[in-house]
Length: 269
Image (cartoon, rainbow, N blue to C red):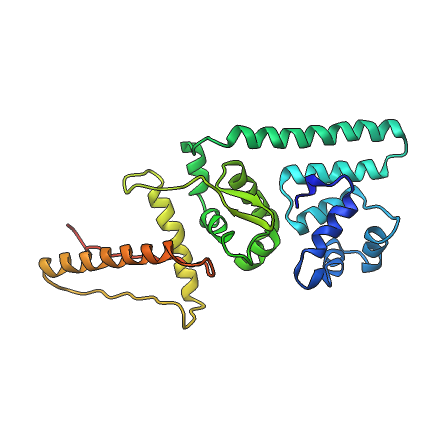
């Protein structure tokens, strides 16, 4: 569930903690370490009558990986909890309602929109946009925290990317987290973004070579051969890519991988 489904910030955070591995055991301690406060303070807040300060709330939002909208809503909930008069609580409740309504309006507006060039430029600017989008297909990668940990990325960065992907309908919120949305991405060979896309993933390939496992495969083979043989090898590689693509279509989502293939002439053409 999203924090926007709650009217009490403590209930929202306790719900998030309970949904973490091992029932959230140790999460309050990790939050306190992230904030630089004693774990007793976190217990007094989320299991007692004490309230978060707004400064602490920003830290909690960063730790969980809240989107910008969720962060704003979260801060409003805390202000409401700390409000000393009914008049102030009423004002804050109206602001909370506006946030909820604006979220629903946004979902309705973007439902049938396609990616424009500006959106494509953002999506293909960094490798982690497509990695996060594909990653949510894996059952163990359905939350910002899980994705950030798996990809070794900052939670606030993942939250920002997830925000974009949700807005563009590239992923959607589901009962158990997030999953692939109906919007699709495709780059033709003549797209102005295809070079950036290829470079992004080749850089990741180079980084992966430093920690290569038995499941990985890297090969570089400079060679001299006939033009006829070169054309045959190109055809073999195309067939291999087509076969791999068919395998992906029919396979369960269990692991996130990238296939980079290079076959090029060395020197002047």
